[in-house]
Image 1 (cartoon, rainbow, N blue to C red):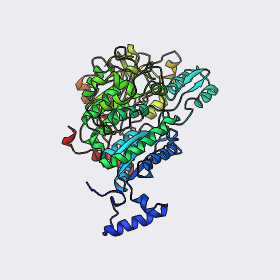
Image 2: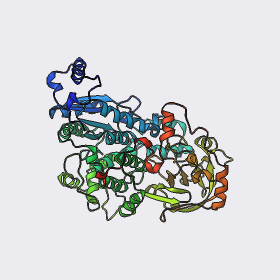
Image 3: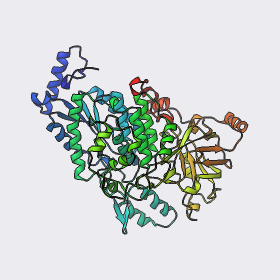
Image 4: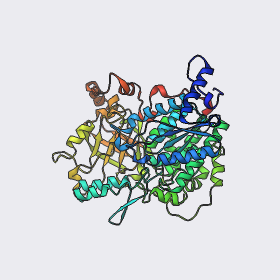
Amino acid sequence: MSKAKGMRKGLAGYGDAGFSLFLRKAFIKAMGYSDDALDRPIIGITNTYSGFNACHRNVPDMIEAIKRGVMLAGGLPVDFPVISMHEAFTNPTSMYVRNLMAMDAEEMIRAQPMDAVVLIGGCDKTVPALLMGAASADVPAIMTVTGPMITGSHKGERLGACTDCRRLWGQHRAGEIDEAEIEEISGKLAPGAGTCMVMGTASTMALVTEAMGMMLPGGASIPAVHADRMRHAEATGARAVEIAAENLRPSMIMNKASMRNAMRVLQAVGGSTNGVVHLAAIAGRLGFDFDLEDLDQLGAETPVLVDLKPSGQHYMEDLFRAGGLTTVLREIQDLLDQDCMTITGRTLRDNIEAQPPTWKQDAVRPISDPIHQGGGIRLLRGNLAPNGAIIKQAAATKSLLKHKGRAVVFKSLADMADRLDSPDLDVAANDVLVLQNAGPKGAPGMPEAGYIPIPKKLAAQGVKDMVRLSDARMSGTAFGAIVLHISPEAAAGGPLALVRDGDEIELDVEAGLLSLHVSDEELERRKTEWSPPSHVKAERGYAKLYYDEVLQAEDGCDFNFLRAKPRSLHD
C-alpha cells in the first residue's frame, strides 16, 4: 500500500510525479485553498444528498458538522458526490443499483487523494453500498448515518413509516379507509428528514454497523432532527483525522468475529431480513462467505429484545431515549466477542463500559423477558429452497409458522398485478401465495415484492395474514408469515420455478423446513419443460453487467467479480 499522504496520494498518471502534484495543486487552489490547508491530512466525505432522497435531507447540515470536526482535529475536509438512492424512488428497485453505488464509492475513494473517508449513509441500500465500497478500497473509513425520522400522528394515533404505511394501506384495500383519508394519511407518515423510524432496513443496517465497530458508539439511533445528530457528525469528522494517522482500515475492523457480532445484534433487534443479504455482500468483499447456518444458530441463542415495530410497538426515537444500541449490547454482552477492535481504536468491551449506565426504560426488554424467543430471523431449507430461504418469524402470525396449503402461483410481478385482486382468482385463506421470477435476475433486482398483498376479496373478509413465499425481498418494515430469498431463484431454474397451482406446500419454521410435496420424478419432468424468462439478458450497459455477474441471495446479490479473494487475516 502506498505511503504517500494528502495531496501526494494517488497522483494522476502524467509520467512525471512532480508535474502531477504541481498540476493538482494548481487546480485545487482554484477552490480557494491555502498551502497551509493543502499540507494537512485530507478527509474525504461522501456527499449522498439528493433531491429524490428525503432520508438524506439533512446531509448538507451533517457535512458541515463533519467538516467542523475534521478542521478542529487539524485535517482538511473535502466532500465529493457519490450515488444516492431512495427505496421508493429507484426503478426497478434500489437493490438493482446498490452494487453500482458500491463501485462508485470504491473507485472514488481509491481515485481521489484522501487519507481517510467519512461515509454518510441512511436509506436502506446506501449503508451497505458504502461499506462494500470501503471494504474493497480498504482506505481508513468511518460511517455515520442520517438517523431515523420522528413519528407523526393521525387522529391521535402515533404513526411512522413504513410499518404503518403497510398496515393502513391494507385497511384501505379492505375498504376500511377511503381515498380522501388515505391521501391525508400520506402526509403524516413521514413528517421530517431521516430514515424509517421502525426496525426497517435503514435502522437495522445502522445498528449492525455500530455493532460491527464501523460507527462511533450511539450513532445508530439518534433522530435525524436531533442536535446530537450534528454533534455525532462532528465527533465522526474528528475521529476520521485520527484514523488517518493510525491507518485504521476497514479490514482491521470488519472480520468474521465482528460479523458474528453484527449477526447476533441483527437477531436481538428483530432486524430486517434485508440485513442478511447486505451482510453477506459485505462478507464477500472481505474475503469470506456469509454463514447462514451460523446466523440460524445465533438466532436460536439470541432472543428478540427490542420492542419496535414491526415485531413490537415502539419506534427508533424510543430506542434512542432508552440508550440506543448500548442498552441492547449490555443485555447480550456475554454472547458477544467483546475483544473486537472498533473504529474508536478500542475494543467493543471498552466502548460498552465507557457509555453511561443503563436506566429504566421499556423499549429494550431484559434478556430474561424477551418479546420473542429464538431470534428474529430463521433459516429454512428443503426441496423448494436447496440453497436456503429465510423468514422473519418474530413478525409473523404464530399460527402460520407450521402450515400446509395449496399453492396459488403468480409467474411474475406483472402476473401478480393483473390477477391478485380479480374476483375470479381461485384462492382461500389457507392457501399459500407463491411469487416466481422476482429474484436477483428475475425481476431484476430482487425487489421488496415478497410482501404479497392479501387478495382484495380475502382482505374484505377480514383476512390479515397468509403464508406467502417468493425469491424476492421484503421491506424490514413489513410483517407477516412471509418466506423470502428462496434460492436458487426461479429465473435461474430453481425449484421455485417448477411450482404449479394446486401443489401442496408445507412450512415448518420450528423445524427449518420448506417443502414442496411433489415427487422428484414430476419435478424432473417439469424441469424439461422449463425455460428462463426471455428478459434475463441485456446487450449493453449496466444491465448487461448486472445480468452477467449478479449472484444469488446467499452471496448477497453482489457481482461475482467484486468479491475478494480469501484473506487469512479474516479467519
